[in-house]
Structures are given as C-alpha cells and as structure tokens.
Image 1 (spheres, helix red, strand yellow):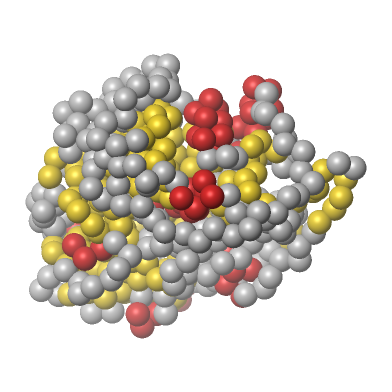
Image 2: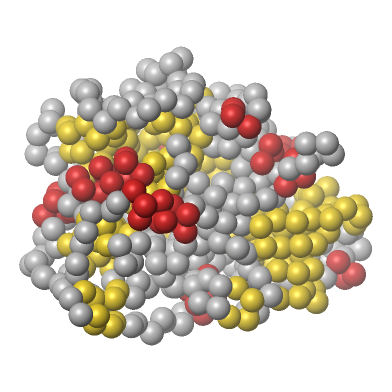
Length: 499
C-alpha cells in the first residue's frame, strides 16, 4: 500500500454496512463489494466526520499553505471467525496480505499527518479466543509501509462469512502491535505477500482472491474495479466478473510486465503494465495532441495511492504542461484552480494502441488559499510510474491474476442497467490491445518527443468544466532543482511500502 502522504490527494473513506458488504449470486459465481466514499485528512477523521482546522501563515513574500492532508481510502467490513466478528479494512491492489487488528493490540504513535497516539482498534478488532474456527500457525507477521506505519502479529486461518456462503481456510494475520488506524486487505499478486520476503524461507499462500476460487465462490482469480468519479458516493469491486455497463468503448487487454527484473525475479510480482506514451489534449482539435512522453515505461496500477508519481524529469514536464509550478517550501506543485487550461485540457495515457483520457481538473486539490490548488503529480526517484486514484477514477480495470493480464477501458459515469458477466476464461468482450505483443521489456532513458498517434474514440471525448475567475496569491514559485526534486523523492518515495 502506497504511503498515506500528508499534503496530497483526496480522501475516500469507504463504508459498507455488514448486511450489504457482499452481494453474491450463487449460480452466477461472483462477489460484489460496494463501498461508499467520505473525505477527510485521515481515515479516522474522514470516518468520524471531524474536519481539520485550517492554518494559514504569511511569511515575508510567500504564503504557507496548509493542505487538507486528503487521501483516498477504500474500506470494507469483513465478517470473520465463528461466530463472525466484524472488522473494517482498507482494500489495496498494491499489496497482497490481509491483516486485521487483534484484541488487546498495543497501539503505537503515528506521525501521519501529525504525531499522535492513536486508537488503532477503533474500526474493529478480532479476538482469536472468541472464534472456534481460528487456527494459529505459530509464525510471526511483520509489515511496514512507506509512511512508517507498521503491524506485527501472528499468522493463522479462519472462516470468512459472505452472507450466503462461508469461505473456509482464509489466511490472514492478526496484529498484536500497530500504529495504523485501520487494517489492510491486500488483493494484489501473491508474489508480493510478506511471506515471500525471505529468499531462503519464503513461501506463498492463497490470499483472498485465490481463496474465493479455491472455495468455488468464483471461477477465476480475477476482479474488476470501478472507482467511479472523484466526487461520487459509491464504487465497487467485482470478484470473478465484469460489469459491461461500467465502461465506454472496448476493453483492451495488455500483459503485466516485470518491472522488478533487476531484483532477479523472472515474472511480474506487481500490477505493472506498459505505458507507451502520454499526450496533452485540449479537446478542441481531435488530431492535435502534444507529446509529453514518447517512450515506454512500466506503470503500477495502485488503488492504495492517491496521486500519480513519475520519474523526476517526466513529472516536471507533465506539471508544467498543465500550468503547474514547483513550490519548494511545500515540496509539491501548485496550480491556479481557475486556470482555463486546467478545465479544458486532459492527459491522454496510451497503453499500446488504446487510451484513457484523464482531465487535468481531476489533479487539482483545494488549499485554504483562495484560487490556489495543489497539483496531483509528484516526482519520485524510481524509474517507473505509479498511477493512483486520480488516474484510476477514469478507468474501468479488470485484474486477471491468473493470466497476468489487465483489461482496461474508459470508465462510464452515466449509469445504466448492470451487465454483469462471470469470467471463467478470457475476459468477456475484451480484445488484445494493438501493442499486446510489444510490451515494455527493460529500463531505458525516457524520450519526451515524437508523434503521439491517433486518438481513440473514447479518449477524444472532451470533458466539460466551468471556468471561474482567476485569483492571485502571494506564492513564490521557483523551478525545482535536481537537489530539491531528490529531496521530494526521498520524502515521498516513501511512495512504496517497505517490507
């Protein structure tokens, strides 16, 4: 799970009541988890509705901006054990383990967004002594994320209650010590499980998507994700199925790529796909696209990340094309909220012959300085791209963990009757992308020019947006030097978890 970086993003705390957590069609063999969205500076504050107190300090010729510390979170309530106990967990495609807070957990201090001693069991805890089906396997669990949150405990197995069916033999960890305000449900590839971290004694187990198939709840280890638009109140994940009403155009399939080959792994362990190009499109001329990236780079699709992270030079190029400028004191990009460019222009992400349109307005996040927004692009020191929720909100994504493929299309916000189809083999109605057989293979220097290519039909649809009046602020914006960018990357490069 990507670190909960203070200062950036938009928080989504998602709640699913126990009775409506999971909808399962016995004959159809799929599981749907719906979530609601809330905003706040942290998961706990978003959940409780507590608002952050804004701060604004004038310092000589610039303004200290107090960002609302907003992040995106997706959480569901799980019922585990016999009798069932309810715990709330964050759903994360960027990790692969399920862990829950144990009864009597020792809660440590958390430095996000400010140093505090938190109540790490306020969102539910699991008491192993109260479950007749709990089996402790006497092995220790340890995980640490990039934002310095951690959990330590023990591994075991128990039963997951899906309402109409029970799933036996679910492996998860029970934390006895943690400084995280909420537990995590990782649904990524099993190769990223913490049990695989030891080269000598590493082993793989069946995580939740695999257990659902093993118990014949779904036919294939696959799930589709519809985050919905940023300000929507609902979203959903379908295990074992695809909903054709949730996307526009055609689902295009691409292979996962091995972005970790330098660590001597021989197959994909994370959800990286080939990002072939990035363009900038005003929407006024279908054929006029400014090329911002003209070479291939691996891109991680991660619902546990709020923003988008790019190699430093590319991040600066993308931000400047949007009219954003680096603010060295706040270690981030700032943009005029009322900029016409922000409301009339979009990034076009090309994944090898098909494209996802991502309006610049999705990347703007309000500050308490009128007319000034933080921009949702950040530099990091890695060679790959991380596409977080500000991108994923515009995409409908099907993750096939068995075939090591991803199918994507432009998300459809217009609603309509559900068209859910079970996935037993290939993703129904999906086609191989034109660039399927020519994926990214190795890290090379990035190319920033070249012809972008033709826009696909869904990517050429411009998004409307109102343009307000401009307002000036007393910000001093300076171009980022390499040293400043490296400093930002070291702070926010906590963008990847540490295990």
